[in-house]
Length: 234
Image 1: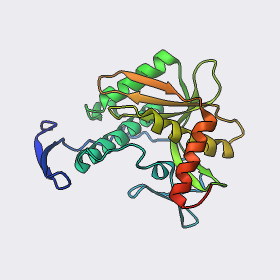
Image 2: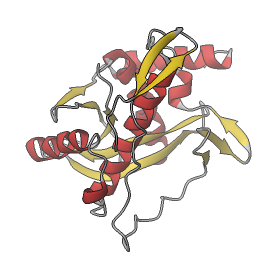
Image 3: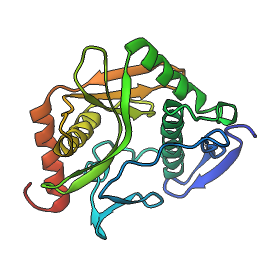
């Protein structure tokens, strides 16, 4: 593999020449080992276009509803896409690791620090993952999404955890995102998630955990974003 910054690409949105890293190598399972099957879900999901549907009707996701809450306009689109691809790959590596099937020897070295940070977090905090990549749908407000982790810290009730690999942990965004996930999750599950966390994994192998406790205020803000998205009152 060449240098991470050995390709120069013109970004038409900024008229600048920006260095582009090599594409991330997608994590894979050890040969002969497989992930457990996905949980049953009413939602259809087009992974390539990131579109959710129910019976052919498109359903907006939490991230679509709150899109624009963080301003990424100063980041060239090509770099933004590469960072998003890296984040998706890091999530996949963690999911494979949690199911004990990750091919560590084939892991892209640029993903290793994020996996290391996840392992350190689990070891130091005692976090126990019970479910991963859970599809959720709110039947009243008609939105959906996929939350990263359901589990708990020692002595704490059930919670949802969203993993971030961004250079900055945007707490306001995470608060609104996780409350959308929490409300939809609790609509479909008898054991309610009472805690909400965002976990930033850093490229130096460290992590930052944030808990969000303003449940009513965050829910109100999410509903305001939903109303703007749908053009009505929710």
